[in-house]
Length: 154
Image (cartoon, rainbow, N blue to C red):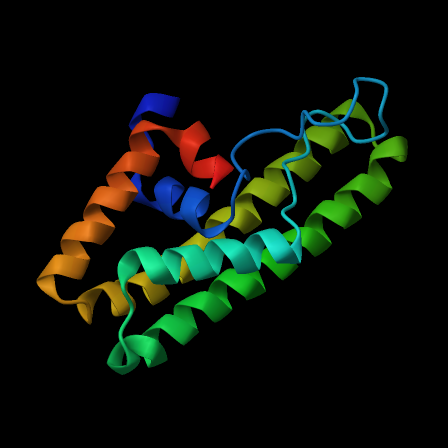
């Protein structure tokens, strides 16, 4: 799979948790944070992203129930991801190369499972959107697919 052809679930990942698709390159090379550990967004970044997405989709009071479930899955996924990242970082100094690779594979596998849950919550929300909101969502998700770095920055 290439970066240019991310599936919808990857677009959801980028929209739901900013900058997860990119390795954490903000720290200097000599930092204790390994290059192959994904960026872990702060709670403030996640809250801002949820608020922005709520506004961009134009969620109405009648849609708040489905929205709240979707937003809670995003929060739960972020908390789970944070815990997984911290556990990985704590173990890295003692991991062999194969164990390091397995640790990363386990992280990605768990992330995929979390994204499936997010996708199900999003489908429920999406099905309750009106046509204009669906069109806006479709456009928003296509933009993130075509420009993953832009989506990650938001």
